[in-house]
Length: 198
Image (tube, rainbow, N blue to C red; front, top):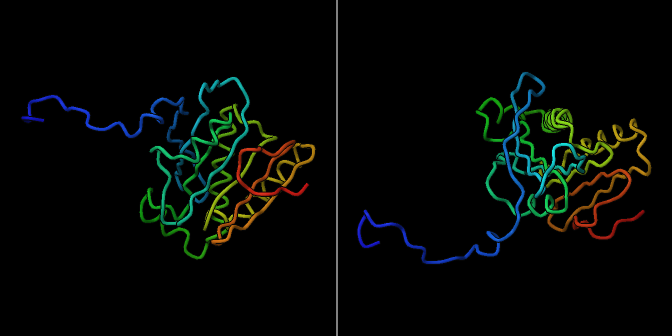
């Protein structure tokens, strides 16, 4: 700009390919969690989302735990949502976006507490009416992956809904990250979990 009063002039266009894509809407989602915590996370809707349609739900649980999911652009949630899924990225206790008490609540409660937080978020999300309860997948890394009991809870819940051929698959990646995915009638083909054994 020649002067502070001039209009800005574009010099580059590095994100042209992404700007041309139909991306899913991302919004903050809040719910009342256990132990009197008010909790939040992000939902990424598939492009062309319709509230009256049922969608598979895919959880992407962040690591850290001193991290937090926000509504900023992120490739993986958009990639999954583009395959006609709703993506839920919960901020469990230990996340750093809801104050010191919430961040420190993971102390001596690194397993059950975060699992209950995430399950409360799933229950709140299901009340919105667009989650296909027979197709719920879980993925995560670092502390987000140690919630393996969370995937087991989902599997138990799926069995109470008499889901045919419900499955739970775990896979450890070379750097120690562990991914879990639980689905009902079928596994999504788009998640890079390597070879899935039937």
